[in-house]
Length: 109
Figure 1: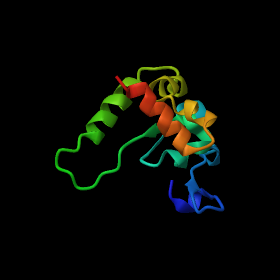
Figure 2: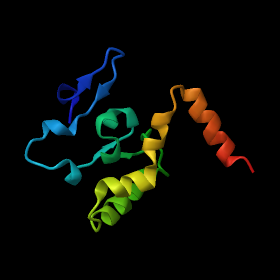
Figure 3: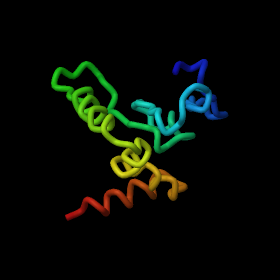
């Protein structure tokens, strides 16, 4: 999907909406993007990846390939994404700072 297929928010953020694809079920589609907000309308269909900046040791596409191979064997793409990425948990935070502080507390030894 390109920008012309997206919905633009008043903040200038482009969000992809899989509902524009009429000949497929939402349960059978994913969005792979380095901007998680781009799949905000179908959060559980999203597969977040890290952006690429010409780093020779980058392995993100290899990780993505492995994840997609694993995904091909599941009956529940959205459930797999939900359990793997837990993006739905971020919805409960109104402020980014609250999310960051909570996540930092989870990783403190």
